[in-house]
Image (cartoon, rainbow, N blue to C red; front, side, top):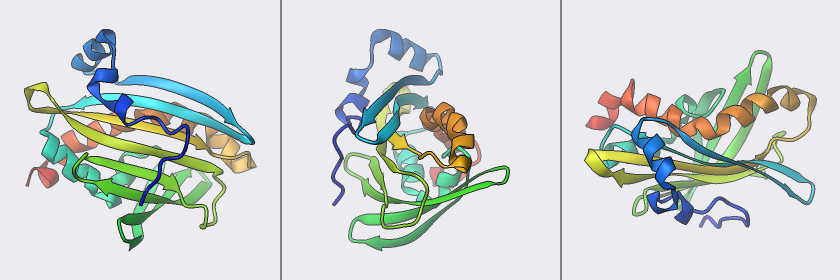
Amino acid sequence: MFVALPGTPSLSESEAGGLTAEDKQLLESGQLVMKPKNEQRGSLKLFGGQSWQIVDVPVEMAWRAMEDLPSYKRIIPLATESDVKGQNGDEIDLAIRQQWGPIDIRYVLQTTLDPEKRVMMFRLDHSQGHEIRAGWGFLRVRPWKGGKALVSFGAMVDIGDGVLVSIIRAAVRKDLLRIPANFKGYVEGEGRELYAK
């Protein structure tokens, strides 16, 4: 069973009720709303926050896309591979590969899907070899007016201090909270026909 770590962005804050009137106006105009956060916790230098995006597909269709873990290479920044490595009860191990030029980073996320709440929660699998120090969060979809869906994402990560990792730090920091926008592009584009069935 997935247990959220202290400091994990709150699922309750991912609800539309956690958004300001200005945030909702931005969402209605098609924009991505981002609330970045930085935090020092012991030796961890975490960055992340929360973000929201309205997706112009029904919530059931958006959830089908969210359940399709191998498709995450289309929504995670710099990802070129996303493969299910195994499953233990409700926990699914999702192997991710991110590449930027000659830089090649691989890690495994322990994920849990909750169909009732339509949320995917994840944390970095520390039993696997990787350069990333820490990472955890969620991706969630909720109904929105007009037959649309609201996608919310929250994460905190420390991608480490290695030479190779430091080269992509700025790109990851910039693009991490864009995951709902990437999800929107995928599910409204090439994924539309696949998940409409």
